[in-house]
Image 1 (tube, one colour):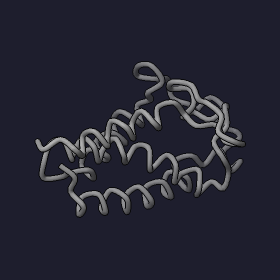
Image 2: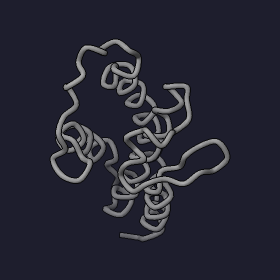
Image 3: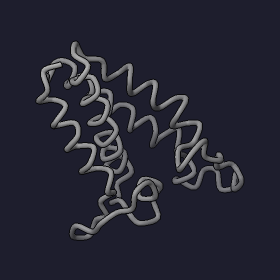
Length: 134
């Protein structure tokens, strides 16, 4: 069941965290760490790095807390997509085929923008979870 208070918290957290991720976590995009060429971490599994598994996932689970389990899960799925979208707004550029987010499941083109396949899947799953009364 949809929890509006938790959803507002998720939106606020997504905006703030995307800014932190852009400004401090992904500094190499701003040419600040060009000398750190070998710094990219090896994935723990699939394309998921230790950063995603040990920091981002727990933060998203905590920030997404809602009174029902389905709303909590829906908030977490929505937060993943929303934070990713806001990151590109902070960055000031559209998603491209070279971005990490498109390597998860691929992407498709809408106008000039690449849309990661996982975005509509997560949004649809979140919408279904918001409708379930558990």
